[in-house]
Length: 306
Image 1 (cartoon, helix red, strand yellow):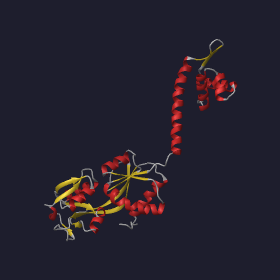
Image 2: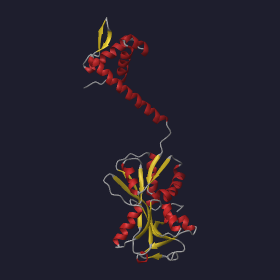
Image 3: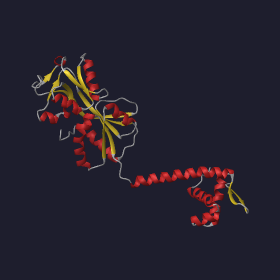
Image 4: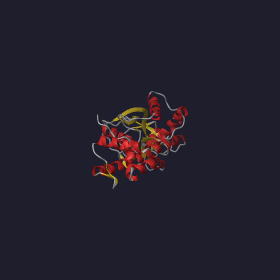
């Protein structure tokens, strides 16, 4: 069985070279000369070559192979020191935040409500939410830049596991002065000449809308598109058009009478929100607690704020 050099042997060898003699190394390391000599002998036996030439005239000098060993072991020692510094920093540093990716409707409107109840049950934790569209969130999950992602549409990928956690429905939002504002529902035929405001390409919401319209052979009249939900709401509140939106994203404006929400007939705009996690990724206890909390929503435990 091959014997490997020990850290002590490497450290002693490097000190002997730096000090220029076993005597010097003995003083610097507070070790006896016989002990140092024995460590050097052990190293030479393990390596199967001599590290030093010993002569009365020149003293202790490195052999050619000993010089190569010194250069390699010096690099190793530097790497070891840097690694130990990093490990010490991990121990002494502030706990890294729990990083979660979320699509915009979930991150802007749903998750702040969810986390209120989570903190009540589990106490506060260091949490960072990165809010982007579905494509960008999935990329962060795949690159492991976040522990897991919360997305608005199912995503099929061989390395991604998904679980639903919340049921949602998209509806038409309009200005209170709109002809549709007082109605309970509208049909696709009602919307054929309506200027619609969409999210950007890559948005899960937009993908769902386009897929449903395609199933019904309906071509929307896209008037504007924004990558911001707030920008879309402001545009509708200024009577620039209509939007198809998650009702949870406009509950405040609806309550204040700034926007009206109307159901759309003939299409299925019901959807689930999903937890997306890279297959086999290790999660901390806190991360697993949060996922279990989210999964409880899928089992019918509603959020009291919504």
